[in-house]
Image 1 (spheres, rainbow, N blue to C red):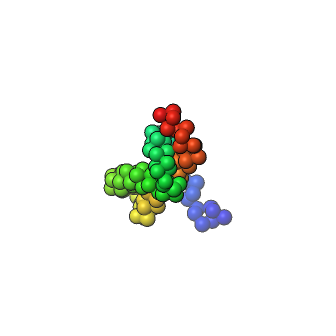
Image 2: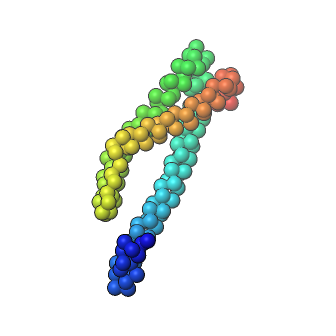
Image 3: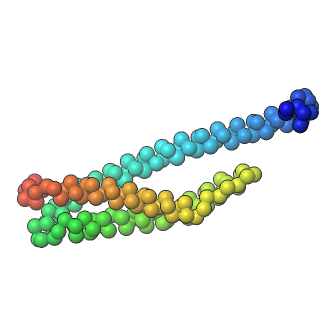
Length: 157
């Protein structure tokens, strides 16, 4: 059936063209796999960094949390305060990173003939996901510190 529609499909004179196209797409596919692996490693490292930052932040602020509880602050108010204190630098860092990331992606995509640029919403969605992940991690650590008795925290400090 293919030979009926394309009679010179087996012509050795045009074999170099199909080989060149195949080599080009194999190279692009290999590059995409490498970028995907690097992006996965970066994602794992970023999640580990956010987790350790949230853990360190909650551990170093345990005494402040205990004092606020002794002075009558509720668990909800303490959680909201610490979420605001930590998420603000994460949000500022994310906003500062959006410009260079967009520019680097635009430079990388221009190398391909069939360009498919990411919509701007994808960058905003990534920032929202990072903020949600950081909030969940910090909330877990702050809740762990809130479960401790304030007297024991203040005694050991």
